[in-house]
Length: 130
Image 1 (cartoon, one colour):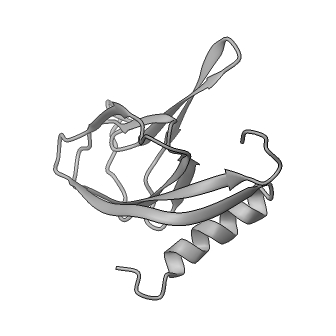
Image 2: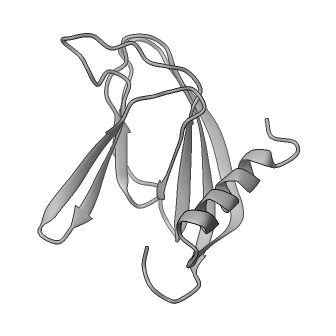
């Protein structure tokens, strides 16, 4: 899928520009997901270890007035005494990069939904958390 490691280089470059105290390390695994209409992914996290997860959207998802978030990726990030909930509408080529221990999932999709997912090890260069 990525014989010249361009996607891996993109992830490493993007993280180093946005979070210079983070060094993306070894690629650990990748997979594609093909959702059929009505399919979804329940909230989950990728563990064990200190990893980043990158989700690349391969197609757009249909929405409707009744289902405005159909096919969207959602993340639930714990903050101090609350949870930050974010929804990402799929747009082909867009990438969401998150710590792999962030709970995430998808709303049921109205049409086919395709994503490519990669996990990478990482380290904090200054010893702090992201």
